[in-house]
Length: 204
Image (cartoon, rainbow, N blue to C red; front, side):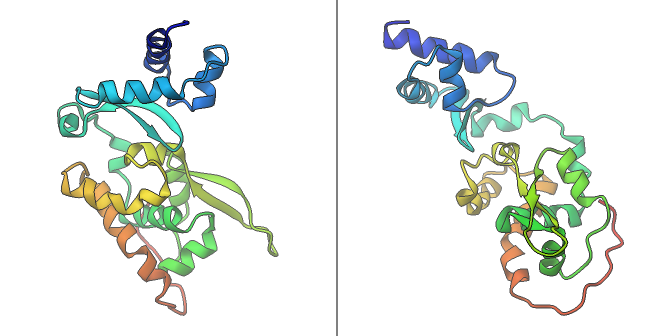
């Protein structure tokens, strides 16, 4: 692997064989500590006009279907399609306000969060527990996962407004469309300052 093209081929093979997206550090470690950044840039350019692209999402690299061909290979995601409106709203709030506790989520939404809603989001791999708030009671706080960024084609949370572009490109299914809408209004809900919390009777 002395020649740059050999290193690029090794990186390519590593990512194809990987079961999940890999960070630069992980790829480098897999290849004996080689500096793989230039190789990744070379591969990303090589694949830019092909049916699959090499992309970086959440500081991890992976191959994905070219956006204009995604409709041909879209996988059925039954678990995601079962998410309720409440779950998409909670996911939007976590994405925009993380790290956030359940009480903070309820304050933003203005309603109590049904038991199990956060569990559903964690089972889907989009939300994770990241610690506890250092306040009385030390409530658990939640944040999104790298899988959340990968699913929506986001490099980081700074790209969240880019969901409008995905929506315009027809890349969001109905549930994802609801998520995009919830994300757009999450900030407004945070400023509404509603007093009490209503009950939420819809299931997660």
